[in-house]
Length: 126
Image (cartoon, rainbow, N blue to C red; front, side):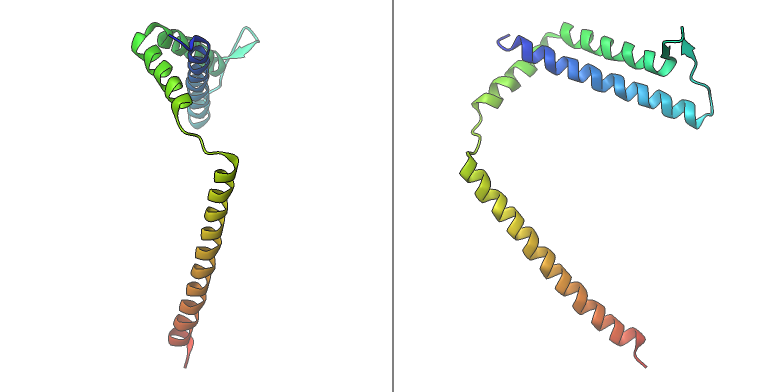
């Protein structure tokens, strides 16, 4: 593995994401069912503890899987091998996107106004 630190960082973030998902899911289930979320020793609630265990378990499980480590390592290598646009190219592309968005929003506004006038004429004229 060439990028061991970045792989560990990705697995830590993945573990945190899984832990937050389980924590929030447990909170939602207890709130929906009107159950109390008991405190464990006055420090953590049960939902927080389950989320913490899930985060640690996910990190350790990912670290043990060789395919996952190789995959993250190869993705990291490809990120640096990719062509990233420069400042001028990014500015030009942003200008094109903003211009196209303004143009099409103005066009849709004109269409909406025209169809509104047409339908008002036929529906509400006597």
